[in-house]
Length: 439
Image (cartoon, rainbow, N blue to C red; front, side):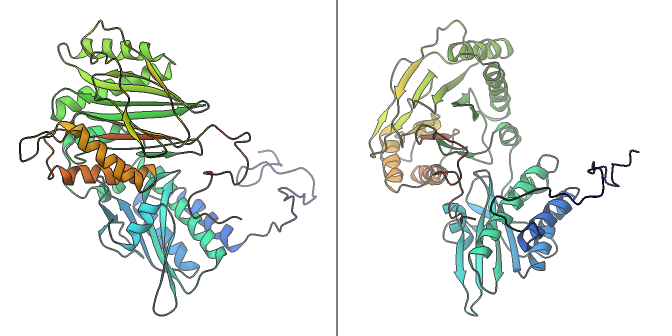
């Protein structure tokens, strides 16, 4: 082994000089701080830690710097309750999102502080993987200042990242999130979904599947490539496992075409060919679109779906009407591409027919008029995209009397405006989590 390699395999600088290494323009000390030690210890120890010990590891590290009563909750699949991680050093029980302290942190995506009678402070911190909601971390400190708040938020973010990373090769966290029996078809659909929430300074997006534990043929997909947001919603014919396997094929065909940089018409033809060959005589409805995040121009092909709703920044709601192409799988149709110019702050809601076609107790369909009224109500509250979709889905379920004879799924996208001149600038609007404290 060469002399310049140390015992960990790292290449050392030749000679005996200490060297300066990393340097800070403001001359700040390179000595390890409490925060660096805490976050570094979590990173170092979690590297080979089995998934079942991630929660106890976080609890142990927080306790080592004075935190008590550590709890970690993960959101369940229908986003109604927070389910606790268990293990050494952790406490907690299943907690409803609505009306609870941890629920407030979850729905606001921001830190919540609870002053306790003894003068200590209970912190509830949203665990965000990027912008996707993972759950909530809570613990108590004797008191807090801005340094504590900053470090606490970073611990919550790192905990979210650890859970998501370990989830790639374990069922531990999926079992915690499962608050009710899940059908095989729903399990298959959840495995194909991207993260439910994606937020950047330029665009935000959120989706949801209902019924979460028994969904069959509904699915959605998206990808942000350079300055183009690709988005799609699907509804495969039928119910249960057969519909789920069809939807999986359609999503795979869509991703295959999208990653090959196919145009919207070519994407449609590709999905149409694949489904027609694989499932002759069957079909799936779809909406596939592209949003140019520089110009705000949205282009789409509607293959048999209800018209999307255009929710303007000023609160107005209208349909994105136009020619409807045949569902994919029938073969031979020429897709029609339509476009619209969005304004900063405008939102577009795509949904499957189960949202509006469900029949109520009086025999009448829920209907698009009632959907539009609910969209106007939730939009007036000026909530985040993620919270708007969550509340809208649950409100729709309540308005329909809990009836779900068909899947009912939503995908909401908001164009926030063109990219800033310097997208790497520190502190740009939307570039930091809600409630973040400047360093």
